[in-house]
Image 1 (cartoon, rainbow, N blue to C red):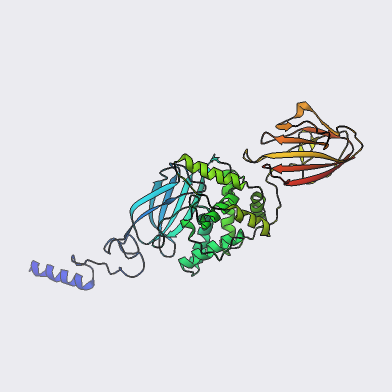
Image 2: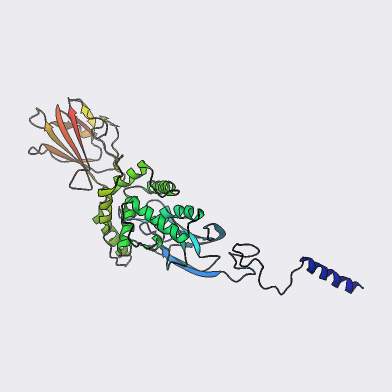
Length: 421
């Protein structure tokens, strides 16, 4: 009697769906387009067929990230939402190379984040602090995934477009073209995805990456670079247009000062030190085209010329043009770093002084290398030898021209005319 009751109870439970058959091989959730049940991905893993396996490689570059920097990968669904699966790896050499082997992922969409020190291609030396660069990619459509400045700038914009109904492929194409437009790059070029570009490669498209990366780096510190990138990402996210005049000014002010020949040699030398020969593509033309055709306006200077110095009103400031004869004034210019040079040339325009028309206190000289006074041209050269400078300088009555040359450019970056009464 007991045996029959047990059989009847089991039959009833099965009828109510409270027991599952041991022979069930595939979950009823498989194929519904969502990760549910005991799936480890969308319609895969658990009771569903195994998730796809991916091996992923690429390079993290600003300049290249240094050996030992970290790389984080997060699995995404087709809407670019994280699904709770992630992996960590490291940069394996100074070319920024990383590799993930045989990852079981629920879909082909992933985000990548590289954190670490990097080679500064503008200054030609390793960074003093770490930065972060991001990327989002569809692994089914690319052979490798590089993480660089373009993948970082486009990521939030791509996510926004996908969340609002744009396909991933269209979002990637649109976001990249919007970034290129900011720098007056021809958007009709058949550009490959941003994650396929590399500063170590030689195509015209890689030259675009080098040009934009160099402008973004400029003569900024790592914190200044990170701040600029974060603000650009925020500005571009919802409409793909650079709306901030101050950010636009930041870009053009540094672009105008870049030494493209020096950048090219820095990249060649860096890879040569790793035993890698690179053929750096022409990229200076993109920077010059941006300088010539952009509507961005310079609103600030890369070198800081404060209003006052230790010895009074600064002769180089952007606000004053009239100074008092017989008084000492400051000659102050603060450079952002040592990879940017500064030379100031002072010339007499008019005045009654027959000999030297200005004079300085030797004991006040702070980080200026001063030439002899040139009687023929009635001029004198002051070269900055430190990041912060100062000097007590006095003038006789007259008008004078102060020309500021950055990185030994043939034309002064800035010219100021002063009147001394």
